[in-house]
Length: 454
Image (cartoon, rainbow, N blue to C red; front, side, top):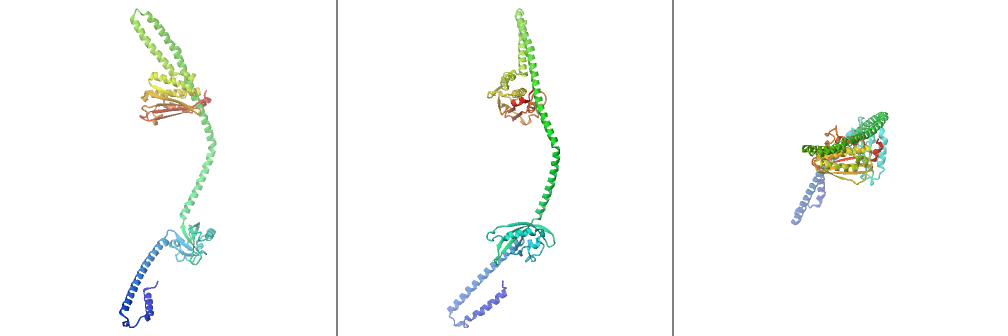
């Protein structure tokens, strides 16, 4: 751009060239012509001042653009270089010069390949051929990438990623605009990750070899455990059967011996009452003894029913539970509505006893703790399984404590129900909350259990 002195000199030369067209004697001009000439000069002066102001504004915008260019190009966090078709560096920013360890002026006219280590020259050559093989119009916005190692002037090497685009130059040739990203940190992390993966793979192989050495032992232990579990299931069924046999024996003894003895006493007491008409006090005493004997007889009948259910052995679980519900209503005053489809499902003998005792315990819990006058017993089954659900709308309790706070010894409590059912492949679940009632569900295999029963 010309300096102010040069502009002044050029203006004086132009003024001397135009002086020939100006009359020497301005007095010869008419006043109107002089005024017109002065007006034209004033207009021209204002026009020149406006042009000068526009030039100053354009120069200011140019300076601002140069500053933005410096910020965006020279101070960019990545390196920028522009290459000719022959691979020479035409331009580069400060970041590129810093990455390569040379002065910015020293980059120009040098081949970028001079900074690439020999092992990666072939990779760069293929990338350059791919880049130059594209058509400029078709390559608009298209970027080709490659990762290789560059060497600084001091001899140190670093990993870089080259992102290149092709654009037309002013002379009709093509230039490549390339960004240089230092990816040494990422490459080091990848190498560390590969090393760690190799170490982990080796450790896995060592652990796998150790596990393979113990696999046969584990299989034998698992087989032995399965056999012991089956033995436990069979023993549990046998134990249940033995307990029921003992209950039936005791019930039979109570019915046949003690029950018959009480009946005989009642008969003799009736004969004694007939002969005691002359002594009223004896008749009153005989009536009291008769009432006690009747109460004892009923207690024995109830005890016989509690010990053993003939219906359970003769008919099945469903009919025995109906009979049990009727007995509970008569003795405890709670009405249990039995809901079932009247289809009797085959159940192994030992399992019948476990189901019956478990249901009996659940009915007792309702009568003692639920605080209700009615409850429901639902019988169902599918896919070879039988299901018994006892539902009430009573006080309820914290179901999370089932099996923890209930008694673990004596009786046939909730904990024992779960343990006995699990030993024969069954399940016991309880859903309850304080004030929301309780649903206790027993589920066990049906005829399948007969295979392991004694």
